[in-house]
Amino acid sequence: MKLLASTPARIIAWLVASALHAAAGAQDHAVPAFSKVDSMEARVQGCVTCHGQSGQGTNSGYFPRIAGKPATYLYNQLVAFRDGTRSYAPMNYLVAYLPDAYLREMAEHYAKLRPPFTTRTPPTADAATLARGQALVMNGDPAKTIPPCAACHGKGLTGMEPGIPGLVGLRQTYIVGQLTSWRVGERNAAPPDCMKRIVSRMSDADITAVAAWLAAQEAPSDPSPESSNLVRMPFACGSQR
Image 1: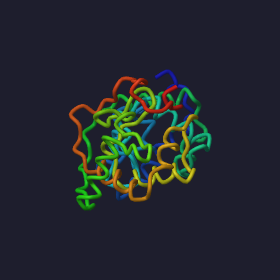
Image 2 (image 1 turned 90 degrees about the vertical axis):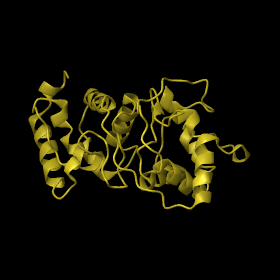
Image 3 (image 1 turned 60 degrees about the vertical axis):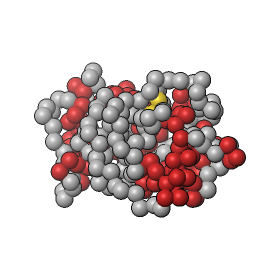
């Protein structure tokens, strides 16, 4: 962690102080705690309230599990938040002044973690909606030229190196929000933006179905992302460069 010693003290102090302030009343697993001050664990305490102590997520439906996702994916998101190409004010503010190398270290820290998954929320969708979601995730919809999510996000939906995230462990509200953001142009990825291409073909009902089915899935025995497999991917994807 070559950057730790050079990290400005005011940034470290702000990260820890903001985390402690925001954690008031939060779930126990979202309360900042660390064993060593001079560590990356201490320096990511500003992330804990929303993403959990080990990146496992919290009971909130609006913040994702980030533990175990590919480091390049996490790094790309941090850069996007810092540079304003992905908008969410708390994240934009949190990483606004952090250099590339530091963001890379943060991403690598979370990519190595494998905490237990949070308790899943039982699906509230009807059987037909869940069946549609499963069909889209596992088989796609050739009539609408929608490829299966599993083609890129992995057969176990745990993601694919270097830049595609896992989908298991995400809550329905978060998935709906992100897919909708892509469809309306509020979220983008490096060109060619394969997610934009796919989601533009999905209806509101499709998005709801995919999110409901994914959120209902049990945690995998091994949440590690798959190795890169460009041959299996249906489209060229800028995230895999």
